[in-house]
Length: 184
Image (tube, rainbow, N blue to C red):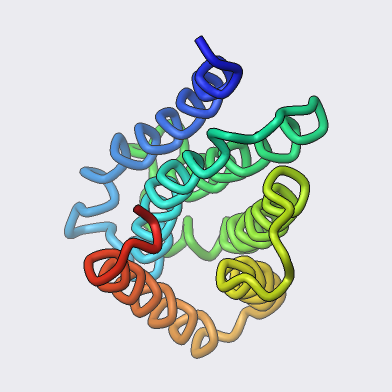
């Protein structure tokens, strides 16, 4: 077993727990009486980030691992689990209004998104020696910027615009993957 395969177990567990947390809360979040478009966008975005990050994790297969590199890389799935736990509480059935839940937790989720973007950037630098001009830096910078803006604004129009941005980003990423080998 290679060092990457050994370390991948820890990463896989965190990614799996994050995905299960989200999927486990979907039936409650989709309930007609309490659902919220804003919350569903964050939920879908978090699930997409989990899937994308897990896929991109394979780029670390040839890394010469150090303890610091491992810790920096582990921040990525750890932060995504934090985001998943923020967007879907452990007792999802007890949520009376997903819109109220969104309003109460959005600052924590958006700060988690900013930390995820910074963690991805740090891991890419430490583990892959990625240059600042690499296209992935745009995704990382966008996550940090949108995370900070989303955390510090309470303007509903800004949050709707962020939701549209998330949906557009997800669609562009899916189309880009279908048309190229960017994530292959």
